[in-house]
Length: 168
Image (cartoon, rainbow, N blue to C red; front, side):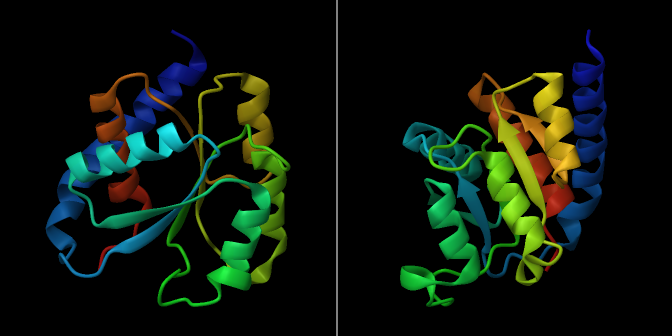
């Protein structure tokens, strides 16, 4: 087992342990917004299905490239109506993107004060140590490997909810 997979396993186990304690504290109120920056619509639909199965209190809004991500986060253009496009509580960011890489988008987020302490989690299929190192150096809060199975994705969504989204 690689150091990376040991680390991911420890992070997931810790998150699962915390999720049991935290679930009782969240009121089933408004849905939080999670901005999913991903160019593959199949990945987004799979993530939405896993979110429904996990029965978590967040809504996934997808944008497909860096330009859309920057417009959404800035509240520019079609994203200016924050009642329709609320500022996200969390960003799930893929690394391999058209026009701008995930790392370039992450750099933009970290350079803009209006994004403040916005948690950005890399959700990537890449297990390359270089990708992981660069993501953390660029300001990622966490690096998650896309699971291969649906039930594993459901578990990952529950962990993200328990660890990264504020209790209401």
